[in-house]
Length: 142
Image (spheres, rainbow, N blue to C red):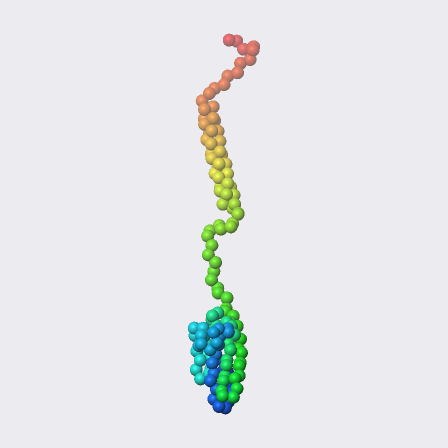
């Protein structure tokens, strides 16, 4: 990304010494977050990130005056779009599988009962064909 620059408002004559401080750290020791540099009084921040969030103080000093400028940097990062990881049926209290299994089991059971009834009836009718039934009345001679 392109670097952001923050110019101090230095005093024009005579040329001032320009220094920067970050978040009121040990004044003017040169501590700035990684990616922040100063060249000819201009603070440049490259690869802007969360570590650059804060207040930058510029001190410009010459033999007559000391001037300060304050710049606040607030970094807002774009939200990440990482999909959450889930496991199958995590948090799913549905019993759809049990219902489907019950229906299929019930159908198979009904089919088996029907097949057994059919073959049982077939067996019964075949066994009845060879039997002759006689009926006799009380008046019949023996």
